[in-house]
Amino acid sequence: MSQSQPTRAADLMTPSPRTCSPHSSILEAVLIFRDADCGAVPVTEGGKPVGILTDRDVALALAEYPDLANRPVADIMTQSVVTIGPDEPLEVVEAAFTRHAVRRLPVVDAAGQILGIIAWSDLAPNVADRRVGQVVSEVLERH
Image (cartoon, rainbow, N blue to C red):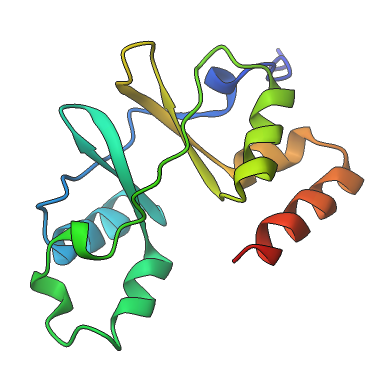
């Protein structure tokens, strides 16, 4: 039995991602990276995304903060979170990655509660090869 092609954000997302709070320590977030085998942790308050922390954020902050492990996630997380609804079609998901030059999109319900997360790598297999190159170039140009 073959799986059907994904057609909307909910079909691509990793459901119920591990999250942390802005007050969690960087060490706690790093342990989530390790235990969940992921490179990004949505930062939530009351179940709503308020930021995102990536392994890259942690690596770059090492030089700036000698006490990084004990600092709160809020000190280095990306605060402007772009989200998407679970019923958005693939074209809208792709456009959000391009427009906002992000590598991950939290998926939220109508109340703003986190349902899942989509990485660019989740979308890429469902986009024409030519478009993958264009989108990746646009995202990388902005970083």
